[in-house]
Length: 239
Image 1 (tube, rainbow, N blue to C red):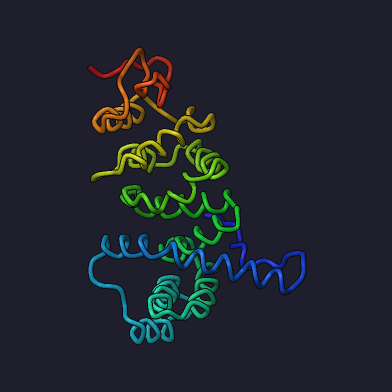
Image 2 (cartoon, one colour; image 1 turned 45 degrees about the vertical axis):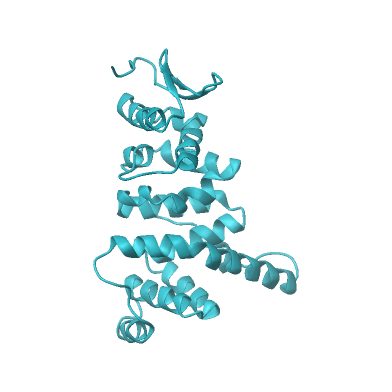
């Protein structure tokens, strides 16, 4: 699966000092935003994350393993070694797209840089490996919180990824703000064509259950009448 080169890995225009400042700001943003997502993803895995010594030993034995590189980068980050973590995440990004900590890191960096298409590809990669990650609202939050991010995510949804149903109706609870954000993404023109009756109905039920919408004439509407989600043509509202 091709993934665009992370923004911090590219040579770009402008002065060297400006590039260094931008890279530093992006890194600070990424590290600050990683905490919740990494902790929640770690909780989904069996066993605790590797400590720094173990991760370094694993990477020394397998320097071309994306999993070993990602484990080391995450361990360096948890130890507060931000610059080293960035270097190893950069290396890990060249080794494959299935390692979750690496994809999460570069998703945050791409979002901080406003590279929404790249950020959406990273999110897509995370969910292609494990659709249950759709339940982690913080993974999608950078994309859902910006208009261009929602548009880029909708373009990935237009490809009908196998995680779409989990995005519309993830396992476990989801905050009202996250439900509203997902409805906004699925209202995007690019996403609407990928919806089927079942996927739309699942999110509609979540909106009704949260007291955010009512089912009216093939749509789910807020109390003020605003359409929050609509069924695709030919579908009927579930009884």
